[in-house]
Length: 384
Image 1: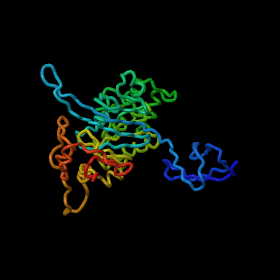
Image 2: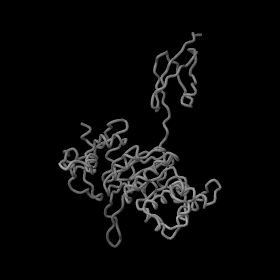
Image 3: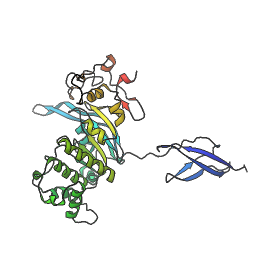
Image 4: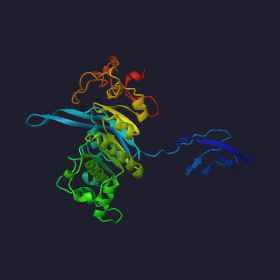
């Protein structure tokens, strides 16, 4: 029997810093050692190593709540008496993304780039042409309405216009309770009125507002009602489609702070659709920039907003108004208009407007270039 000894290993995982632990008193004949109480989880070490040797232990990373792969949404163009399809508007054309619990992914870009279509396709409010959407590992694309019904409570949407999205014929209490009644949900044996009152208080409104109608509230209050309606079914994912664009600046800050506090308290995941980079910097963890139905750059907020690599992202950030001196040079403006999604240009879709486009940009769509482990850009200029 071999002499006993001591081995030292370094745990390399997804934690913020690696941790060292000691395996005491083993023999050469032992095939594995069970080490417990490493961040509350047992880690299996498959072999014995001499002291001082680093062991890379693959810890299972949490699976994303939302996974989207190669999502496409094409709207047919029909003409003639027989309404035959003669083309298609490629609103979304091969979008892939992932979103973890308790995180916010911002989807930004010009109007008409396909942001809202992505959000609606994720929630299965519109049919996708191709691709796959998964919620917590469950494939949503292709499910029937009856199969989707029990999954509706796990994903909700806050729309851009709070007045248009609220039924003017229903009271606030009826609007909030409608989702719970439709899905047969209750809140810990509480009466519907008590549940509505709790939700209104949660979003900062007086519970007495349940008896009033949408037209009696301001824009910010109506958006709080829309958020309460989304929270009523206790979702895990909320798609926020321009939730502050129709509001005053001071009210925008209130709604953003509310969304942030709800995320911290409930662990919600947000897919935030916006064109406001100030909102992105305040609320988001990651950013995906869309142009003509495709994602052209993705990374953390710090990477994309402070070190943009795609010419389109750089142009968007340069166009953000800033308070400066009168003699400060104006930002470079994008030339031309966004091409039609019914007839996107060959190669990189941005090349007709890009001041740095070359011949290779006009022939083939660029492959993704990994700037870092979390930063990806679709541009040949970054591959050189």
